[in-house]
Image (cartoon, rainbow over all chains, first blue to last red; front, side, top):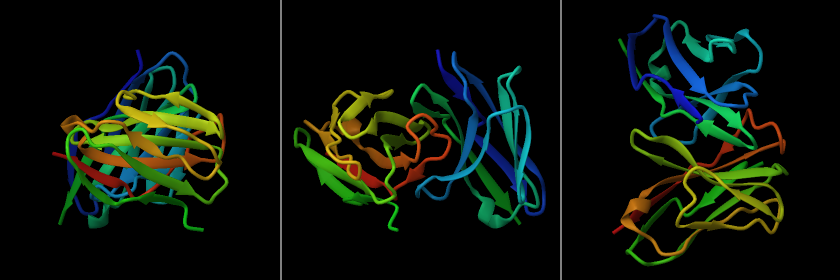
Length: 108
Length: 114
């Protein structure tokens, strides 16, 4: 079958670094995407990994290991505004399938 | 550009009523899709379309119909609403028909079925 697993909740303090893991299972894999969602609003695209390795976009980085069916989103220099839900997703055929999401709470 | 526009933003229905959630995009995207979001369940794909005249089922299609007569519009129809369809519905689009790494989402339609 096809599935994605990620932790339901993560907590951290301002200025810290946090890693949100995602493991997946699928027969055909193109790449792993990450999305952010604030307070039930529209999800927004953060990053995408098609190949193994690290992709960096400002304070956010995303990593993929295709051999381990594993990826993670790394958030550095955490700010209060980073409190949100984060979703990993992969493309299955012509559709994008999402994990259940990780709620990140950043405290001061 | 307005991006992806969904209407209505809020709706309350009674069990058995029918309604249509509207979705329009002005980015000339070929691919459009509908998701529902329930607490603890993430985003689940209902239906999607890779172009005008072409639609397909996603993970949870039962109780919903879609059509794609134009590139811009992708309405979602609830045929006979049930309390289990109480949810937040998101419409999303992407540029490519084969590469959907980046979806653009609307602001959501919050539906309550009594």
